[in-house]
Length: 167
Image 1: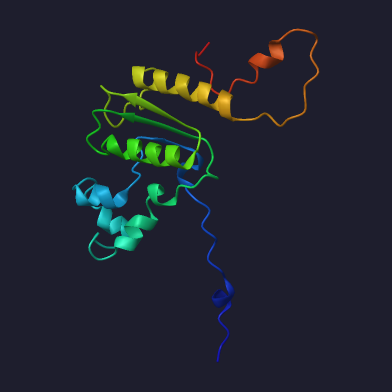
Image 2: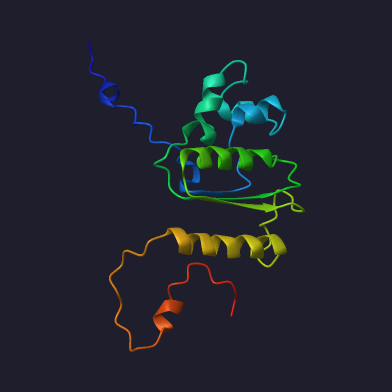
């Protein structure tokens, strides 16, 4: 019998929600619900079948199915007038993260549509960048060694992840 090298490969151990590694802007989070409600036409081609034919795939590809307490702090933002991915998707994931005790931030822009973050200088992008900057400052730990400073705080300004102005 010929050897099959792929037979020795193991499926990676499931380690909770890892969609986006801690963040999403208008993300689809429950593909089963999206398909059942008629959102995202063509989703069946992406998943490899209809919801009725392969329901397990829809569950497995949905971040809400993989939330656990070991997940990283998660930032979510969505537009309340989104017609592509309904706002309930972000709220659903936020609720699951809350139940699991995961640090999270949900930014709701009630007037915004799906592409609210498309224009860098637009209101949606500015609000989201500001909230994300604060979230990252609150939840990312700086593990680099302390820098030598000449007594001023100029080094602190260089630690900013997302400058809020273009100057």
